[in-house]
Length: 317
Image 1 (cartoon, helix red, strand yellow):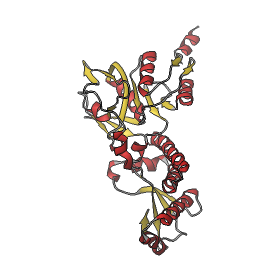
Image 2 (image 1 turned 180 degrees about the vertical axis):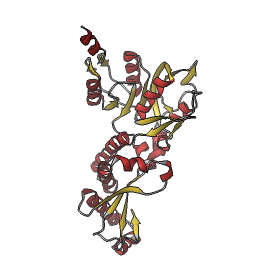
Image 3 (image 1 turned 90 degrees about the vertical axis):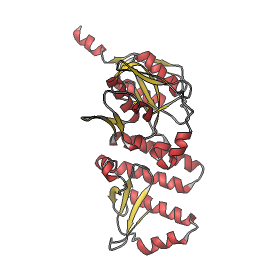
Image 4 (image 1 turned 90 degrees about the horizontal axis):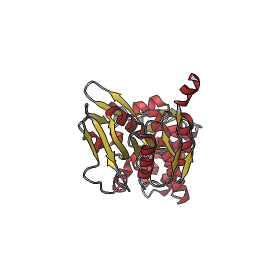
């Protein structure tokens, strides 16, 4: 009897969702599971089909949510919901302005804290930013890695404790919540970043392949492979504040897939470039027999370092 009772504690009740947008989903999850629900916002508001997830273990719930709704939750559901692919304007900072402009104006009051409890609701296509949350009078100031600047969220939260809310928030962002002496930091989780950035670049590859826009397509194909082949330690290093503006990457030998895709990027770009100086620079400097470096950056743009034979001159492309 006891063992059956203990096992039942790990079962997640069924979830019957009528479909809708981001805010419909967070409201339904919050109502069903009585948790503070925080979701990384879709730029288009989100479009989720009707689904019914049966009662099951936490791990089964996570798997089925991913399969039916194409979003990610923690193995033990804590109310945090993230997109399987990071929003394009977040992972590729050159599109940050377009990302910000895709969200509607927000009401003046959507999130508040009273007696240490947090309440927040977004409806229709409303959202709030990470800066709105940082403006709350929390027990400790909340800092966020610059990668999360301007990020938009959708919420359904009723009198949640700081701990519950921040745990959901970190999961939604794919962040690591770090407790420090005088504040808390939402830091980039390199493992989550890798998975969700790869999906974002794959979506970019699909979009640009359909339109036969070969320059951004070659960037996307290259970045999918760079992110796949770069280890978590290097990604973490690239996102450290002290490495801002520095080239952090991995060395790839001639004949590797990353190497081949890097040169394909160059070929496609210079063939379409009106400026002969770029083509001439590569002819003068780059030795095709030298390894290349695939670069990871917070800004998310595709970059490669190429070297001459003596490896005392380089071109970053």
